[in-house]
Image (cartoon, rainbow, N blue to C red):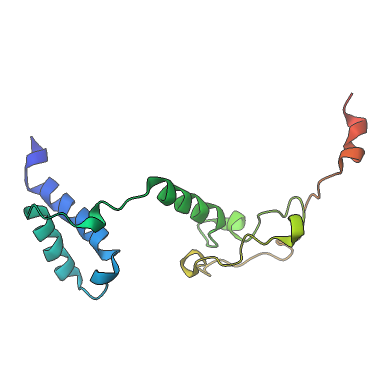
Length: 133
C-alpha cells in the first residue's frame, strides 16, 4: 500500500533528478531546480529521452572497469596499479592505466616502498613442463 503514497513519489523524484543531472543541458541547474524538473517529468505525460537512454551492458562494463582500475584507499593495494605485477609487462608493454578518468584516481592512499615491483614472474612453459607428469 505504501507504494502509492508520498515516500515512493519522493523516491521516484530523486531518481529522475539524478538521471536529469547527468544530461549536459541540465548541468547549470541547482539542486532545487533539478527537483522541480524531475517533479514536472513525473507529473506529465511528456517523456524525457534522458530517462530512457540506458545501455545496461555499457553501464555494467563501466562499473566493472572502475572497480578494477580505481586508485583509492578503498581499493587498497589492489587499486595501486597492481594489474600485471604478478607476471611482468603486458604484450607490447600495454599499460591499462593510460587514460584513466580523473575521478578514478582519488590520491587518498600512500603506497608502500616496493609496492610496484613485479612479485612473481611467470615461468615459461619449458620451465614448468618438468612439473607436469
